[in-house]
Image (cartoon, rainbow, N blue to C red; front, side, top):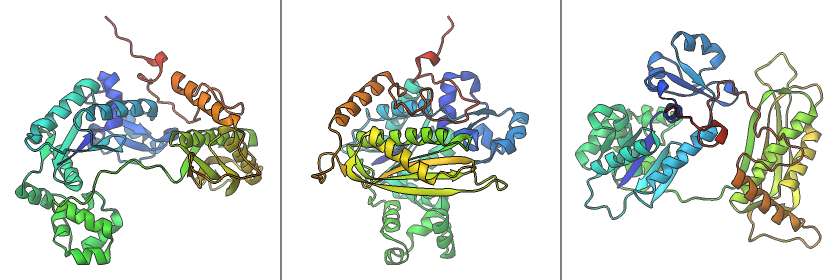
Length: 419
C-alpha cells in the first residue's frame, strides 16, 4: 500500500503556526519580488482570488476583502517542510519527498494494519508536533493514493482527512468521481486529446485498450493507466544526482550598471558551486544568461547568453564565480536595464571519477578551502562566509515588503511568549 501525505495550504499554514490570529482568515502568499499570488488559503479561494493574480492588479481587491498578503518566506517554509518529512519517516523507512508539501510513503510488511487508523495517527502526529494540517490518501498504488488524497481533501468532515481505497468498489467509485484533467500526470494537452476520445473521467481512461494507449501516447501513460487499475507500475523514485544545476533569479530592481550585475552573477555562481559540492559533482561547462525587463516594451530589450568550457572539471566557488563574472562582461550591453540573470553549470561528473589533464588542473588548495567554507556556513547558517565580490548583507536581492519573521531559522526572529 502507498500513502500520499499532503500539507493543506502549506505556505499559509506555516504562517498560521506562528501567528494564530491568522486562523480562519483569508491569506495569500506572493512569488519572488512580491509579483503574483502563488498560494492561497481556502478562505481566499472562496472569495475569488485567482492563482497567479498579479498583486498590483488585485491590491484593492485584497484590501476590500481583508485578505492578508505575505511575501514568500522560503527559509521558514523549507524548515517546516523538513520537520514534517522527518516525522513521516517515523511511520515507514520507504519515503519519497515529492514536493515541499507532499510525500509518498510505501508500506511494506503492513499486512495486518488498519490503514484508516494509521492515517489518522499520521495526521495527528504531524499536527501536534508542527501545527501543520494534512490530508492522507492510502491505496494500493501511487496514482490511486493521489486520487484518495483528493477525496480526503475535498470531503474533510466525512473522511476526517483520511481516505483509504482498499476495495475494487471504492476504486471504481473514486475513478468515476475524478475528472480526467485532475488525474496525476495528465496535463492540459493530454486531457484535451483524451476528451476527443471520449474520456471525461479517470474511469473512462482505464477502459481504453492497453495497446492503443501505448501506441498513441507513451510508456508513462500506460504505467499510469495500470496504476489506476490497481496494478502498481509507478515505484518510489530513488534520489538521483542532477545532470544540470541552475540558479536564475529576477532582480529586486532593474540594473543598468555592470557592478551590480557582476555581484549577482557571482552570488548565483557560488550557489551553483555549493549545490555541486553537496551532490559530489564537478562541472565542465558554465552558462551565463542576462535578460532585460520584457514587460517594459518602451525600453530597449536585450537577451543574451554565453557558454564557457573549462579545461578541467571543478566545484570550486572561486573558479566558477570568476569565470561566470568574466563571461557576463562579454554579453553586457551598456544602457540596457536588466531584470533577470542566471548561471547554469553542466557537463557534470562525479568528483571521485573523472578524466585528469596532464597540463592543466585545479589548485589543490581549493578543495580544502571549499570544505572549510561549507563547514562554517553549515554551522553558522545564512552564508556567513562569502566571496569578496558578493553582497555581504543578502544572498538574494528580492522585493519582500510583506515578509513575516523567520521564526525557526533566525535567532533574532525567534517567537516570544508572553507569560
